[in-house]
Image 1: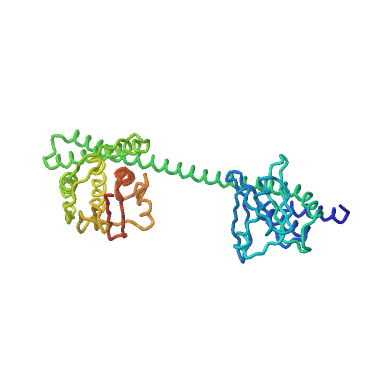
Image 2 (image 1 turned 90 degrees about the vertical axis):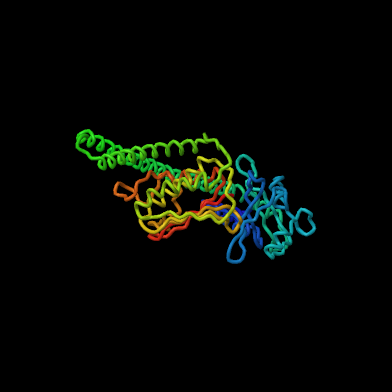
Length: 410
Protein backbone atom coordinates (compact mmCIF):
# COMPACT_ATOMS: atom_id res chain seq x y z
CA UNK A 1 0.00 0.00 0.00
CA UNK A 2 1.64 3.28 -1.13
CA UNK A 3 1.61 6.59 0.75
CA UNK A 4 -1.43 7.93 -1.14
CA UNK A 5 -3.41 4.83 -0.33
CA UNK A 6 -2.30 5.00 3.30
CA UNK A 7 -3.41 8.63 3.47
CA UNK A 8 -6.81 7.62 2.13
CA UNK A 9 -7.15 5.01 4.86
CA UNK A 10 -6.18 7.53 7.57
CA UNK A 11 -8.75 10.03 6.32
CA UNK A 12 -11.30 7.26 6.03
CA UNK A 13 -10.65 6.23 9.65
CA UNK A 14 -11.17 9.81 10.81
CA UNK A 15 -14.50 10.05 8.97
CA UNK A 16 -15.73 6.63 10.11
CA UNK A 17 -15.09 7.49 13.75
CA UNK A 18 -16.38 11.06 13.54
CA UNK A 19 -19.94 10.20 14.64
CA UNK A 20 -21.18 7.81 17.30
CA UNK A 21 -24.82 7.91 16.27
CA UNK A 22 -25.45 4.40 14.93
CA UNK A 23 -27.22 5.39 11.71
CA UNK A 24 -24.68 8.10 10.91
CA UNK A 25 -21.76 5.80 11.72
CA UNK A 26 -23.09 3.11 9.36
CA UNK A 27 -23.67 5.67 6.62
CA UNK A 28 -20.13 7.02 7.01
CA UNK A 29 -18.64 3.53 6.76
CA UNK A 30 -20.59 2.77 3.58
CA UNK A 31 -19.71 6.12 1.99
CA UNK A 32 -16.00 5.65 2.73
CA UNK A 33 -16.01 2.07 1.44
CA UNK A 34 -17.80 3.10 -1.77
CA UNK A 35 -15.27 5.87 -2.38
CA UNK A 36 -12.21 3.71 -1.61
CA UNK A 37 -13.30 0.84 -3.88
CA UNK A 38 -15.00 2.88 -6.61
CA UNK A 39 -18.27 0.99 -6.05
CA UNK A 40 -21.61 2.21 -7.33
CA UNK A 41 -23.36 1.65 -3.98
CA UNK A 42 -23.04 -0.24 -0.75
CA UNK A 43 -24.90 -1.62 2.24
CA UNK A 44 -23.72 -2.37 5.75
CA UNK A 45 -25.60 -5.19 7.47
CA UNK A 46 -25.45 -5.64 11.22
CA UNK A 47 -25.69 -9.09 12.79
CA UNK A 48 -28.67 -9.73 15.07
CA UNK A 49 -27.62 -12.88 16.95
CA UNK A 50 -30.88 -13.08 18.89
CA UNK A 51 -32.91 -13.44 15.70
CA UNK A 52 -30.07 -15.11 13.72
CA UNK A 53 -30.45 -12.43 11.06
CA UNK A 54 -28.55 -9.61 9.42
CA UNK A 55 -30.33 -6.31 8.91
CA UNK A 56 -29.83 -2.89 7.39
CA UNK A 57 -31.70 0.28 6.55
CA UNK A 58 -31.92 0.69 2.77
CA UNK A 59 -32.47 4.08 1.15
CA UNK A 60 -35.25 4.06 -1.44
CA UNK A 61 -36.83 7.13 -3.00
CA UNK A 62 -37.41 9.80 -0.37
CA UNK A 63 -37.35 7.34 2.54
CA UNK A 64 -35.74 4.22 3.93
CA UNK A 65 -36.93 0.72 4.75
CA UNK A 66 -35.47 -2.07 6.83
CA UNK A 67 -34.31 -5.24 5.16
CA UNK A 68 -33.58 -8.46 7.04
CA UNK A 69 -31.97 -11.68 5.85
CA UNK A 70 -31.44 -14.95 7.64
CA UNK A 71 -27.79 -15.68 8.41
CA UNK A 72 -26.72 -17.92 5.53
CA UNK A 73 -29.25 -16.42 3.13
CA UNK A 74 -27.83 -14.71 0.03
CA UNK A 75 -24.22 -13.68 -0.42
CA UNK A 76 -24.26 -11.24 2.51
CA UNK A 77 -25.88 -13.87 4.74
CA UNK A 78 -23.29 -16.45 3.64
CA UNK A 79 -20.50 -14.00 4.50
CA UNK A 80 -22.05 -13.46 7.96
CA UNK A 81 -22.22 -17.21 8.48
CA UNK A 82 -18.71 -18.16 7.33
CA UNK A 83 -16.68 -14.98 7.86
CA UNK A 84 -15.26 -15.35 4.34
CA UNK A 85 -14.65 -12.46 1.98
CA UNK A 86 -16.74 -13.01 -1.16
CA UNK A 87 -15.70 -11.31 -4.41
CA UNK A 88 -18.03 -12.24 -7.29
CA UNK A 89 -17.49 -10.91 -10.81
CA UNK A 90 -20.90 -12.10 -12.08
CA UNK A 91 -23.48 -12.52 -9.33
CA UNK A 92 -26.10 -13.96 -11.68
CA UNK A 93 -23.96 -17.06 -12.10
CA UNK A 94 -23.69 -17.66 -8.33
CA UNK A 95 -26.45 -19.79 -6.78
CA UNK A 96 -26.05 -17.99 -3.46
CA UNK A 97 -27.17 -14.68 -4.98
CA UNK A 98 -30.65 -13.61 -3.88
CA UNK A 99 -32.32 -11.52 -6.64
CA UNK A 100 -35.25 -10.59 -4.39
CA UNK A 101 -33.66 -7.34 -3.17
CA UNK A 102 -33.02 -6.24 -6.76
CA UNK A 103 -36.67 -6.90 -7.56
CA UNK A 104 -37.73 -4.78 -4.56
CA UNK A 105 -35.38 -1.87 -5.22
CA UNK A 106 -35.28 -2.03 -9.04
CA UNK A 107 -31.49 -2.17 -8.98
CA UNK A 108 -29.44 -4.41 -11.32
CA UNK A 109 -26.56 -6.03 -9.45
CA UNK A 110 -23.71 -7.21 -11.67
CA UNK A 111 -20.71 -7.74 -9.42
CA UNK A 112 -20.28 -7.68 -5.68
CA UNK A 113 -17.89 -7.89 -2.80
CA UNK A 114 -19.01 -8.92 0.72
CA UNK A 115 -16.59 -8.32 3.55
CA UNK A 116 -17.06 -9.44 7.18
CA UNK A 117 -16.53 -6.92 10.01
CA UNK A 118 -15.24 -8.50 13.21
CA UNK A 119 -14.83 -7.10 16.70
CA UNK A 120 -11.77 -7.53 18.93
CA UNK A 121 -13.08 -10.97 19.95
CA UNK A 122 -13.11 -12.01 16.26
CA UNK A 123 -16.91 -12.21 16.34
CA UNK A 124 -18.70 -11.20 13.15
CA UNK A 125 -20.77 -8.08 13.94
CA UNK A 126 -21.51 -6.91 10.42
CA UNK A 127 -21.15 -7.45 6.68
CA UNK A 128 -20.13 -4.71 4.26
CA UNK A 129 -21.63 -5.34 0.84
CA UNK A 130 -20.45 -3.28 -2.16
CA UNK A 131 -22.09 -3.47 -5.57
CA UNK A 132 -21.08 -2.83 -9.19
CA UNK A 133 -17.51 -1.61 -9.30
CA UNK A 134 -17.35 1.22 -11.83
CA UNK A 135 -14.15 -0.22 -13.34
CA UNK A 136 -15.85 -3.54 -14.03
CA UNK A 137 -14.85 -5.67 -11.04
CA UNK A 138 -13.52 -5.50 -7.50
CA UNK A 139 -9.79 -6.22 -7.17
CA UNK A 140 -7.33 -7.48 -4.58
CA UNK A 141 -6.43 -3.83 -3.92
CA UNK A 142 -10.09 -3.19 -2.94
CA UNK A 143 -9.96 -6.12 -0.53
CA UNK A 144 -6.83 -4.65 1.11
CA UNK A 145 -8.64 -1.34 1.54
CA UNK A 146 -11.55 -3.14 3.20
CA UNK A 147 -9.25 -5.06 5.55
CA UNK A 148 -7.76 -1.76 6.75
CA UNK A 149 -11.16 -0.10 6.92
CA UNK A 150 -12.82 -2.95 8.81
CA UNK A 151 -10.68 -2.38 11.91
CA UNK A 152 -11.92 1.19 12.26
CA UNK A 153 -15.44 0.20 11.24
CA UNK A 154 -15.65 -2.37 14.03
CA UNK A 155 -14.60 0.24 16.59
CA UNK A 156 -17.10 2.79 15.23
CA UNK A 157 -19.96 0.24 15.23
CA UNK A 158 -19.10 -0.93 18.75
CA UNK A 159 -19.05 2.65 20.07
CA UNK A 160 -22.34 3.48 18.34
CA UNK A 161 -24.01 0.33 19.66
CA UNK A 162 -22.80 1.08 23.18
CA UNK A 163 -24.21 4.61 22.92
CA UNK A 164 -27.51 3.29 21.59
CA UNK A 165 -27.70 0.78 24.44
CA UNK A 166 -26.97 3.52 26.96
CA UNK A 167 -29.65 5.75 25.44
CA UNK A 168 -32.10 2.84 25.62
CA UNK A 169 -31.20 2.23 29.27
CA UNK A 170 -31.62 5.94 30.05
CA UNK A 171 -35.04 5.99 28.37
CA UNK A 172 -36.07 2.89 30.32
CA UNK A 173 -34.89 4.50 33.55
CA UNK A 174 -36.92 7.63 32.73
CA UNK A 175 -40.02 5.50 32.18
CA UNK A 176 -39.40 3.62 35.42
CA UNK A 177 -39.00 6.93 37.24
CA UNK A 178 -42.27 8.21 35.79
CA UNK A 179 -44.03 4.97 36.78
CA UNK A 180 -42.55 5.17 40.28
CA UNK A 181 -43.67 8.79 40.64
CA UNK A 182 -47.12 7.83 39.35
CA UNK A 183 -47.31 4.93 41.82
CA UNK A 184 -46.25 7.24 44.66
CA UNK A 185 -48.90 9.76 43.62
CA UNK A 186 -51.57 7.05 43.50
CA UNK A 187 -50.46 5.83 46.93
CA UNK A 188 -50.64 9.35 48.35
CA UNK A 189 -54.04 9.93 46.79
CA UNK A 190 -55.27 6.55 48.05
CA UNK A 191 -54.18 7.28 51.61
CA UNK A 192 -55.80 10.71 51.52
CA UNK A 193 -58.97 9.25 50.00
CA UNK A 194 -59.20 6.43 52.53
CA UNK A 195 -58.47 8.79 55.39
CA UNK A 196 -61.34 11.00 54.26
CA UNK A 197 -63.69 8.07 53.63
CA UNK A 198 -63.11 6.64 57.11
CA UNK A 199 -62.66 9.83 59.14
CA UNK A 200 -65.79 11.56 57.81
CA UNK A 201 -68.32 8.87 58.78
CA UNK A 202 -66.45 8.30 62.06
CA UNK A 203 -66.91 11.99 62.91
CA UNK A 204 -70.60 11.63 62.08
CA UNK A 205 -70.90 8.59 64.37
CA UNK A 206 -68.96 10.28 67.19
CA UNK A 207 -70.93 13.51 66.99
CA UNK A 208 -74.20 11.58 66.75
CA UNK A 209 -73.28 9.47 69.77
CA UNK A 210 -72.41 12.59 71.81
CA UNK A 211 -75.67 14.22 70.77
CA UNK A 212 -77.59 11.12 71.81
CA UNK A 213 -75.75 10.95 75.14
CA UNK A 214 -76.34 14.62 75.95
CA UNK A 215 -79.98 14.75 74.86
CA UNK A 216 -81.23 11.19 75.26
CA UNK A 217 -84.24 12.27 77.35
CA UNK A 218 -85.16 15.35 75.29
CA UNK A 219 -85.38 13.89 71.76
CA UNK A 220 -88.71 13.00 70.18
CA UNK A 221 -89.29 9.92 68.03
CA UNK A 222 -88.62 11.72 64.72
CA UNK A 223 -85.36 13.20 65.99
CA UNK A 224 -84.27 9.80 67.29
CA UNK A 225 -85.14 8.18 63.96
CA UNK A 226 -83.08 10.76 62.04
CA UNK A 227 -80.20 10.35 64.46
CA UNK A 228 -80.13 6.57 64.21
CA UNK A 229 -80.37 6.72 60.41
CA UNK A 230 -77.39 9.08 60.42
CA UNK A 231 -75.41 6.66 62.61
CA UNK A 232 -76.39 3.75 60.35
CA UNK A 233 -75.32 5.59 57.19
CA UNK A 234 -71.96 6.45 58.71
CA UNK A 235 -71.39 2.85 59.82
CA UNK A 236 -72.37 1.46 56.42
CA UNK A 237 -70.02 3.88 54.68
CA UNK A 238 -67.08 2.66 56.77
CA UNK A 239 -68.01 -1.00 56.21
CA UNK A 240 -68.37 -0.40 52.46
CA UNK A 241 -64.94 1.24 52.27
CA UNK A 242 -63.23 -1.57 54.19
CA UNK A 243 -65.00 -4.28 52.19
CA UNK A 244 -63.98 -2.60 48.91
CA UNK A 245 -60.34 -2.53 49.95
CA UNK A 246 -60.46 -6.21 50.97
CA UNK A 247 -62.20 -7.23 47.74
CA UNK A 248 -59.71 -5.36 45.55
CA UNK A 249 -56.80 -6.86 47.48
CA UNK A 250 -58.17 -10.41 47.08
CA UNK A 251 -58.72 -10.01 43.34
CA UNK A 252 -55.31 -8.43 42.70
CA UNK A 253 -53.59 -11.20 44.64
CA UNK A 254 -55.43 -13.88 42.66
CA UNK A 255 -56.95 -15.21 45.87
CA UNK A 256 -60.46 -15.36 44.46
CA UNK A 257 -62.56 -18.34 43.41
CA UNK A 258 -65.61 -18.08 41.17
CA UNK A 259 -68.75 -19.70 42.52
CA UNK A 260 -70.87 -20.11 39.39
CA UNK A 261 -74.52 -21.01 39.77
CA UNK A 262 -77.82 -20.65 37.90
CA UNK A 263 -79.28 -17.17 38.41
CA UNK A 264 -82.63 -15.73 37.35
CA UNK A 265 -81.38 -12.28 36.46
CA UNK A 266 -84.64 -10.38 36.89
CA UNK A 267 -85.95 -12.14 40.02
CA UNK A 268 -82.66 -12.79 41.84
CA UNK A 269 -80.69 -9.63 41.03
CA UNK A 270 -82.51 -6.76 39.36
CA UNK A 271 -85.90 -6.60 41.12
CA UNK A 272 -84.48 -6.76 44.70
CA UNK A 273 -81.97 -4.02 43.84
CA UNK A 274 -84.65 -1.89 42.16
CA UNK A 275 -86.85 -2.19 45.25
CA UNK A 276 -83.98 -1.15 47.53
CA UNK A 277 -82.76 1.80 45.46
CA UNK A 278 -86.26 3.03 44.61
CA UNK A 279 -86.81 3.75 48.31
CA UNK A 280 -83.80 6.05 48.14
CA UNK A 281 -84.38 7.57 44.69
CA UNK A 282 -88.03 8.52 45.31
CA UNK A 283 -86.89 10.78 48.13
CA UNK A 284 -85.10 12.73 45.37
CA UNK A 285 -88.17 12.55 43.08
CA UNK A 286 -86.27 10.15 40.79
CA UNK A 287 -88.12 6.98 39.80
CA UNK A 288 -86.57 3.72 38.58
CA UNK A 289 -88.24 2.14 35.56
CA UNK A 290 -87.61 -1.48 34.56
CA UNK A 291 -88.32 -2.97 31.13
CA UNK A 292 -87.68 -6.50 29.87
CA UNK A 293 -88.00 -7.35 26.17
CA UNK A 294 -86.45 -10.82 26.06
CA UNK A 295 -87.33 -14.24 27.43
CA UNK A 296 -83.65 -14.90 28.10
CA UNK A 297 -83.27 -14.50 31.83
CA UNK A 298 -81.18 -17.34 33.28
CA UNK A 299 -77.41 -16.98 33.48
CA UNK A 300 -74.62 -19.10 34.97
CA UNK A 301 -72.31 -16.76 36.84
CA UNK A 302 -70.96 -15.86 40.28
CA UNK A 303 -74.06 -14.47 42.02
CA UNK A 304 -72.21 -12.26 44.49
CA UNK A 305 -70.18 -10.58 41.76
CA UNK A 306 -73.16 -10.07 39.45
CA UNK A 307 -75.11 -8.56 42.35
CA UNK A 308 -72.23 -6.21 43.16
CA UNK A 309 -71.87 -5.07 39.53
CA UNK A 310 -75.48 -3.92 39.31
CA UNK A 311 -75.57 -2.66 42.88
CA UNK A 312 -72.60 -0.34 42.31
CA UNK A 313 -73.84 0.97 38.95
CA UNK A 314 -77.35 1.58 40.35
CA UNK A 315 -75.88 3.20 43.45
CA UNK A 316 -74.00 5.66 41.23
CA UNK A 317 -77.06 6.27 39.05
CA UNK A 318 -79.15 7.19 42.12
CA UNK A 319 -76.35 9.15 43.79
CA UNK A 320 -75.64 11.33 40.76
CA UNK A 321 -79.28 11.87 39.64
CA UNK A 322 -81.41 14.70 41.05
CA UNK A 323 -84.07 14.73 38.35
CA UNK A 324 -85.73 12.57 35.70
CA UNK A 325 -85.74 8.77 35.79
CA UNK A 326 -83.37 5.82 35.87
CA UNK A 327 -84.29 3.42 33.08
CA UNK A 328 -83.20 -0.25 33.30
CA UNK A 329 -83.74 -2.43 30.25
CA UNK A 330 -83.12 -6.18 29.83
CA UNK A 331 -82.84 -7.08 26.15
CA UNK A 332 -80.86 -8.81 23.39
CA UNK A 333 -78.39 -6.59 21.55
CA UNK A 334 -77.72 -6.65 17.80
CA UNK A 335 -75.40 -9.64 18.28
CA UNK A 336 -78.09 -11.60 20.13
CA UNK A 337 -76.33 -11.26 23.50
CA UNK A 338 -78.19 -10.68 26.75
CA UNK A 339 -77.66 -7.05 27.73
CA UNK A 340 -78.71 -4.85 30.63
CA UNK A 341 -78.69 -1.11 30.05
CA UNK A 342 -78.90 1.39 32.91
CA UNK A 343 -79.59 4.94 31.77
CA UNK A 344 -79.70 7.84 34.22
CA UNK A 345 -80.32 11.56 33.85
CA UNK A 346 -77.63 12.58 36.30
CA UNK A 347 -74.59 14.83 36.22
CA UNK A 348 -72.83 12.77 33.55
CA UNK A 349 -69.12 12.11 33.05
CA UNK A 350 -66.71 14.37 31.21
CA UNK A 351 -65.04 13.04 28.06
CA UNK A 352 -61.63 13.47 29.72
CA UNK A 353 -62.51 11.35 32.75
CA UNK A 354 -64.55 8.73 30.90
CA UNK A 355 -61.38 6.86 29.86
CA UNK A 356 -60.34 6.54 33.54
CA UNK A 357 -63.59 5.58 35.28
CA UNK A 358 -62.51 1.97 35.87
CA UNK A 359 -59.12 2.88 37.34
CA UNK A 360 -58.85 2.32 41.11
CA UNK A 361 -58.69 5.26 43.53
CA UNK A 362 -59.83 7.78 40.90
CA UNK A 363 -62.79 10.13 40.94
CA UNK A 364 -63.79 12.98 38.67
CA UNK A 365 -64.15 15.23 41.70
CA UNK A 366 -61.38 14.87 44.26
CA UNK A 367 -60.39 16.56 47.48
CA UNK A 368 -62.33 17.43 50.60
CA UNK A 369 -64.67 19.82 48.80
CA UNK A 370 -66.09 17.25 46.42
CA UNK A 371 -69.88 17.03 46.34
CA UNK A 372 -70.28 13.24 46.30
CA UNK A 373 -68.82 10.69 48.68
CA UNK A 374 -66.93 7.62 47.45
CA UNK A 375 -63.63 5.79 47.81
CA UNK A 376 -62.79 5.45 44.10
CA UNK A 377 -62.94 1.66 44.20
CA UNK A 378 -66.52 0.87 43.24
CA UNK A 379 -66.24 1.00 39.45
CA UNK A 380 -62.76 -0.51 39.55
CA UNK A 381 -64.28 -3.52 41.33
CA UNK A 382 -67.16 -3.56 38.82
CA UNK A 383 -64.64 -3.89 35.99
CA UNK A 384 -62.73 -6.64 37.82
CA UNK A 385 -65.95 -8.58 38.49
CA UNK A 386 -67.03 -8.13 34.87
CA UNK A 387 -63.73 -9.48 33.54
CA UNK A 388 -63.88 -12.49 35.85
CA UNK A 389 -67.44 -13.27 34.68
CA UNK A 390 -66.82 -12.69 30.97
CA UNK A 391 -68.91 -9.52 30.70
CA UNK A 392 -68.33 -6.39 28.65
CA UNK A 393 -69.25 -2.98 30.05
CA UNK A 394 -69.85 -0.21 27.52
CA UNK A 395 -70.21 3.32 28.84
CA UNK A 396 -71.43 6.49 27.14
CA UNK A 397 -71.99 9.76 28.91
CA UNK A 398 -72.44 13.46 28.42
CA UNK A 399 -71.76 16.06 31.05
CA UNK A 400 -74.94 17.46 32.68
CA UNK A 401 -77.09 15.08 30.61
CA UNK A 402 -76.60 11.60 32.02
CA UNK A 403 -74.83 8.27 31.57
CA UNK A 404 -75.60 4.91 30.02
CA UNK A 405 -73.99 1.64 31.14
CA UNK A 406 -74.50 -1.46 28.97
CA UNK A 407 -73.55 -4.77 30.61
CA UNK A 408 -73.20 -7.44 27.94
CA UNK A 409 -73.16 -11.17 28.83
CA UNK A 410 -70.78 -12.99 26.45
